Length: 344
Ligand code: UGA
Image (cartoon, rainbow, N blue to C red; front, side):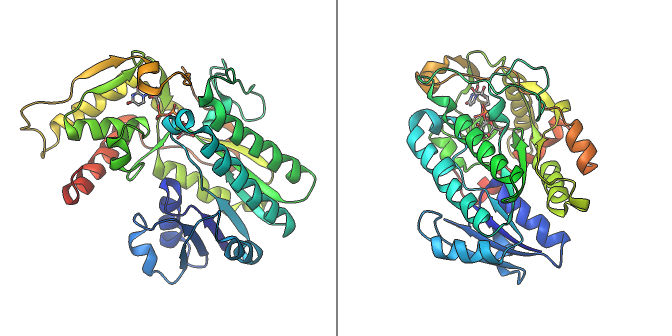
């Protein structure tokens, strides 16, 4: 199988390529990204062909690769809430416009697309568990610019679905629910306060700065360890008996639900017990901050976000295995290890 991964150096991309190279000797991956710092040894593997490039610029290369590939996985996107409120137009340009062009090429060459939708499309749905083919997708008013990402992804989902159900391409949409793990976001982005919550809290602990609980931290997420997520994605790529054809599939771990406050407590406890930090003199305090102060006026939060994974279980014969505390331990340890070489 020839696979094209755009955004291969990103969080999901580099974990996916590593797993493919480890487990599938007859899959060839073509990958593109702006940088390659997360790709390590993969770059020397003959099954992997990498181009340093930009989806807005290297259009001919992309078209050639789309044409020769069996599956296209467009992972390029801005996925950090701080950016949604700071630069919604950049989010629209990259997450919608650039990606829809890739989808049009997949239509042109009748390709299979495995596309990252997001847990964010469910928005503020009041369902206790979000179901792919039933839940309403609920977003706030236009002046709450946080929803630009959710809307861009939702429209991508609808465009892909429309093409797919009319036979112009074959698709699987997967919806990650707060995947975490090594190299989630860069610690440098976290230094500026603009990364997702787990990296942000780890960076604060490392720098001894306060951990901020937005509006008290009662909002909940289901954190999913990246290895579990990638296992589901591998089943989607395998697509035995075409089982994932034109399906939308949540990939999350409902057992790992916790509040942001509980998350802060777990990470702080793990940090304080870590051999490199057990003797630190002081540790970050955990404080409250208003959403407006932290993100600005355009923010609105999502208070519960729990996936139904019935469909993933049934179609993929998959079950997430890694619990909450273990997910956080593995993620924290990897960031601490990485930070030994290049201190933030
Ligand atoms: C994320 C992002 O939109 C995407 O990465 C992704 O598509 C999706 O959800 C997902 O991974 O499923 P969210 O979970 O809101 O959205 O993003 P985080 O930045 O990780 O924030 C989680 C919660 O922690 C939010 O309630 C936020 O307000 C809170 N938070 C964040 C804090 O309390 N303190 C911080 O320092 C950072």
